[in-house]
Amino acid sequence: MNNRNIVNPDLEFIRRLKNLGGDSVKKCFQCAACSGVCSISPDENPFPRKEMLWAQWGLKDRLLSSPDIWLCHQCNDCSRHCPRESNPADLLAALRQYTIANYAFPRPLARAMERLAYLPILLAVPVLLLLVDLWIRGRLDIPTGDVLFLEFFPHFHIALIFLTAAAFAVIMTAVGVGRFWERINMHFPGDRIRNGKSVGSSLLATGVEILSHSRLGECKENRPMHLGHLAIFYGFLACFFSAFAMFLGVHILEAEVSRDFFSPLKILGNLGGALLLVGCVLILFNRLWPGKNKTRSQYRDWFLPLNLFVVTLTGFLAEAFRLMELSTGAYSVYFLHLVFIFLLVCYLPYSKLAHIAYRTVAIIHSKLFGRYEVDSKTAWRTGG
Ligand code: SF4
Ligand code: SF4
Image (cartoon, rainbow, N blue to C red; front, top):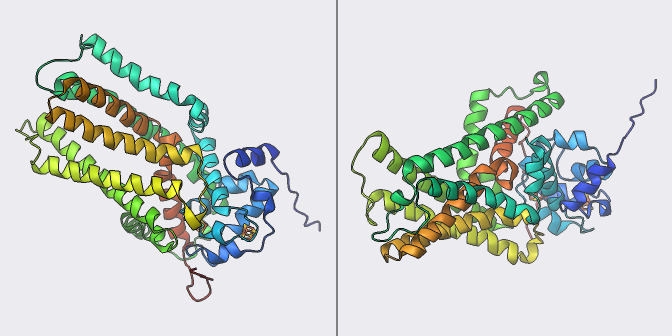
């Protein structure tokens, strides 16, 4: 019987991976130090050594259906210990971006998100939408008198533009993640579930892991990343809850909602904003001065924290200008604030932010399969 496996390398795939930051993949000589040092890699079929091999061979299908590449939190422990400087953490990051683009719809939008040259076009969409809205309402001039953002852009108009953008993002993310889920299940059919965990308990365990960011916390070598992610996660939740509660109070319950600086909802929103700023600064510092972590940053790595940073900063500045009654500054900065929120929300399925959905799906899958079980006695942790 002929047991030979035919390997058909996808050369275009290898070329794209190199462009996305996986340019050192060929240097890997399969010593497995990376898999040994990774504190969250499972004992059975650990990563990222096997992904290095698959990428060298151009095994695109296998990599695109791998949940393992999403279990990695890019702490860079593996790259730091790689004797060949093959940067496995960068390869996994490149694979994640490739996966997002591969399953995205429409795909050209995902490719546009990978290049700075397309940023002006992506920005032009919200700028034009907001300008058209102002033009239709005859509000193209900067209003004088008290600064009232709600008169500049009424809640209904904001809701129409941003809920449409959010609905687009949710549907497109669901399309991409649905395709990914289908592919991973082709490689891990149901009858291979071996630890018998129910869907309910897997979902619960996934929720707990996301709330605590516990896996990222296990990467001891990169504390700023962990703290930065936690600050952004909880900062975002606080801002979202504050804005949502205000909208609900004003428009659904028709209640008197105080916008005073010291009102509870404003305090919550400002605390959330402060957490977001701290998180973005931690992550941006970590990218600017990676130190021993050897993080190599691509355009996509800068896009998300910078976008979030600009959203938060313009939010605070608009508020400050409003309190100082500087109407030109307040309305201009508020306009920018809305533009960058749109950039963050509408293009979520194509940016690094899509990892929220892809990683969640991968974690659920891994919990169902017991893929996460790490034996602390056998895993090699150098720690230094
Ligand atoms: S990536 Fe580096 S550490 Fe990992 S197997 Fe290859 S050479 Fe070894
Ligand atoms: S970057 Fe960190 S989590 Fe990812 S494979 Fe390397 S050591 Fe593991």
